[in-house]
Amino acid sequence: MRLASAAVLAIAAAFLASCATPQRDYRPDALAMMKRDFHGRGIAGMDRLNEDAVQAACNKYQDNPPQEVADKLQKEQLAAIKWPADGKLLGDWKSGERIAQDGRGMSWSDKGGVGGSCYNCHQIGPRESSFGTIGPSLYQFAKLRGYGADIQRYAYGKIYNAKAYNLCSQMPRMGHVDALTEQQIRDLVALLMDPASPVNQ
Amino acid sequence: MKRALVLGSLAVAWAAAAQTPDPTAAEFDKFREIMEQDNPAELFEVKGEELWRARRGPKNASLEQCDLGLGPGVVKGAYAQMPRYFADADRVMDAEARIVQCMITLQGFKYADLAKQPFSNADRTPDPVSLITYVAAQSRGMKVAAPQNHPKERAAYETGKAIFFYRAGAYDFSCASCHSVDDKRIRTQPLPNFTKPNQAIGAVQGWPGYRMTGGVMHSVQWRINDCFRQQRFPEPGYASETVSALLAYLTVNANGHVYRGPGIKR
View 1 (tube, each protein chain N blue to C red):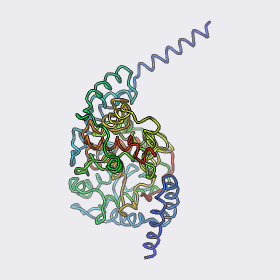
View 2 (spheres, rainbow over the protein chains, first blue to last red):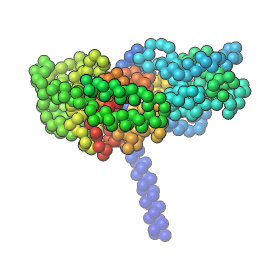
View 3 (cartoon, chains in turn orange, green):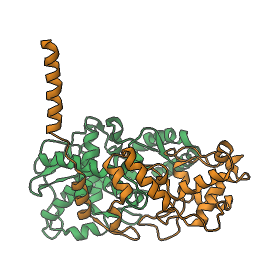
View 4 (spheres, one colour):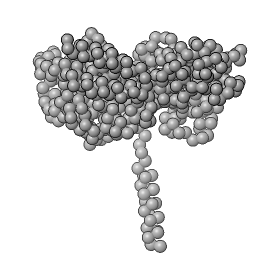
């Protein structure tokens, strides 16, 4: 009895101690320091240091936001996707392969001409062995998932704005931030979805 | 001449080895071992020592009285114990930031001139790069021991950590996007997980480094700058507190590991 209550007291004391000395949040210090120290260069302006709502939630919750926060923001991101007016989501897979290979774009040393940087993180076509592994393999994308309209729509939406499907995904929002054009995204969808694409051989 | 021949044939072997993904890293490690026995970084080390001892700048003074944290003029072991807090500047400084500070206070150079083109290219190696290579070489074989005694050193670590995890910019990237998970790579380039001590040493080891790509000597200041470029951020100021704080986070995580001196990088 005495032991048990001592244990309870010890646990309670430890709990109170952990409450009394909360881990200080250094993010405001970090942001203030960066705003002091950085300067805009080329196309990379100082505005890029500011978080948007998605970045703010992911930073605040270490990429693991509460479900209701994630649901609300994902819904907003999904609603902001601009789908092609003519409904055509499938472009030219050969052009898609070139875009997937092209790692240029959006840095201060880039002047224009944005690629998808896809191979940086994904395995895609069978002939390219120099691929990254931060994202999942996309080899045989449609062969494994099907060639249907719903999968096409998912592929287009995911490339356009990965955060509409997984709020704190590591994947950039290539359409949302105007990195890739509608036609470029169509061509990437074709690389993944066209039955003739080497990805699905 | 002999060096050029060795470099040439090794470069061919390296290029051939770079064709396939996984063996590349292993091949490059072998390549690096051979190269480090005859490392071009040594040339910059010698140049840096000359610059350290020479009377230069508007004040016609040498850097021999520069305090790198272990007392004026003590170079041995200093690099492995930075970033650290310096009372005269009232901030935490990494080694290159401190050298720049000494060039300003002791020799009378101007920060704006030193920051104008701080990184090496094919035509020019800035003096601080040679100096940092000399200073770093004097910590070869020593254990990394970045201090966490002063409150500002602890604050720099925590601020650096927050910078490391801060996602923003056009692609929502942070340092952690590439460097907080084990066994990932970009294309064929393996990515160390800097949140783990045995991999955080990867942020320290080999810097300053002779970079095969372009054949130039670079310090870790350059590397951090290029990380922010690839992160699609704006540019951090040369020798700024942001860079020192980030280096404090990375280096303290690597404390206890042996620093091998200036190295070879791809």
